[in-house]
Image (cartoon, rainbow, N blue to C red):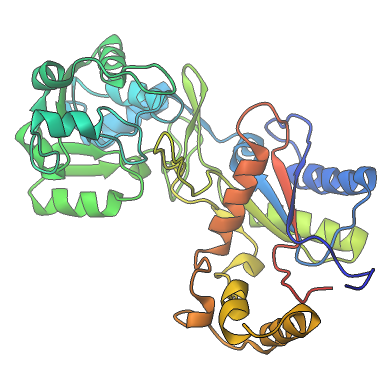
Length: 400
């Protein structure tokens, strides 16, 4: 192996930033912070490096917030303010509880229909073992709160220690609305209680809306239909509404950020001007991965990346090195093997999808893969690195 040959592949670095406030020039701050980090740590910016920014600081710099009362007014306007079926919410104090507070303040009664044994992203209400022992078919059986308690008792979330059935029920009542809680997985089951429905699922929302409308629902809205425009001067998200929102305070949510092509351009241009290198830039939220212990799918945002530069469109197009080593070149070793594999990489043409030589590679969107890497790098706590620099992601075995 030559002494000047590259010895590393992809590197992911968390970049520390000052605390971002509304109105800050985020593009300049991000570019400057990346350049200062490179100087401080002694690394160089390269072409096709990826600068990734958490959606939270983008939304914060935009001032994209809404209050519980803003949500309540939009709920009354769009769903009538009477009895509303609120179906398939995720179990989350950060993601949904504040939204539910606004929804409850905009209704006289909430019929809360929870999916079971877990919510859409894997938060468990009751274990499958208990479901099996009770002889319940979660795909068809509709349970009242009384039946749920008789069969399964109190079930606290493994990580938070919260009994979300009790928590959501109390929250709705505290907001002045009546509450009835049922458990079902068929969307149209809610129509036995009300024909005005707010469906709160994230990734299956289009199908749920279609089923409800076909079954005769009078009004069907999703979380993505609320706060799609300002209410009393509030923030909003034209495409995703309340989807992707997070708790900011006890009475306010931070919404998913607006598209920000000017932000991406500012960062890209600043790096090009200072280094001569063309980087890609993206905004990212939740990563798209699943926790094997808690069975929780991380992706509570509607998408991993709501905004990115054009160079991040597409999927990887990679050869499987171990396939080449074990099959095509099984009789080679050392420099001969390295040369043969390198030549195969350089010679690859067109899409490799469906070809044996790419079997086992990851045909997911680049933004989903890179965003997941960035989410794991930045974390969600006190690391203080809301920007991640990914280097070498587009390199391969032949890159010098």
